Length: 330
Image 1 (cartoon, rainbow, N blue to C red):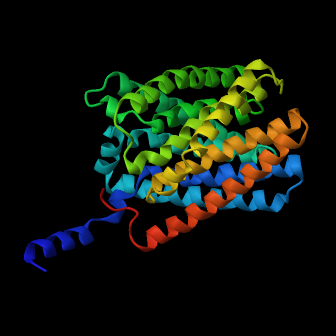
Image 2 (image 1 turned 180 degrees about the vertical axis):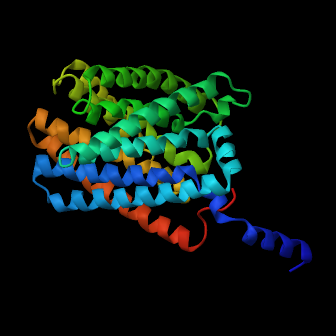
Image 3 (image 1 turned 90 degrees about the horizontal axis):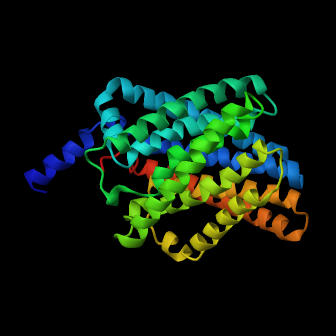
């Protein structure tokens, strides 16, 4: 090995891994708690064991605290790295995964621990609003965005707003939930137009961002769940439009399964998990509103699929950690 390659290798080893701890890693919490909520809903609808959802909820809670502590340490030791992520045209959107994780945890605890849920929801909703304002301001007053930067990860700050009413309708004024829902719904449609334009008329997404296509599932799926909460569980025409839009997008993504299977593993692969969990929950709700074997069987199938996906992603993530592929310079 020549001196140049030796120097490069030494530099790579010396690079502090904490500095490269990615904000996108909180998508793991979203996937884990999404799966927990799916199993908790399956317990209520199908009589599945409660202990599975409870165990996943506890695991996600511990994981969130651990990741938050590590990211907080990164903020203290490498504040410049945080600033770089906030200025990055893609990574900035993943800051909302922190507020969304809080909102999802609040939803998971609202039935059994409403006091805890209230604190989680309050902090999550406030943080979500601040992040939405900051990220939208970044988009409006940008100096470095191009159409190539548009990708499904841009939906993440929007989904957080749509998610607020799911637990919020039981914890605060309904008007507050309608406020967040309106923001999320209107700007989901705006961003959907922009992202589809980029996908249709420009080069394909890079491999690292290919899994984020599954984020397309999240707004209509979560929107369906939230709208039912806001509208007194009334399965009206608008609720059906939201659900069947999510179902169509799921079929579209399923038709590209081979492409996703061929994509190498990146931490962004956790984008598969939460949207699938949201669709699973929406389908289980539909099985109650529309009794019959179709939605019940579809819900069971989706529950099995998202469980397999999260298990696979967990194994691959642990393997990537063992190989020191996580927290490495890109």
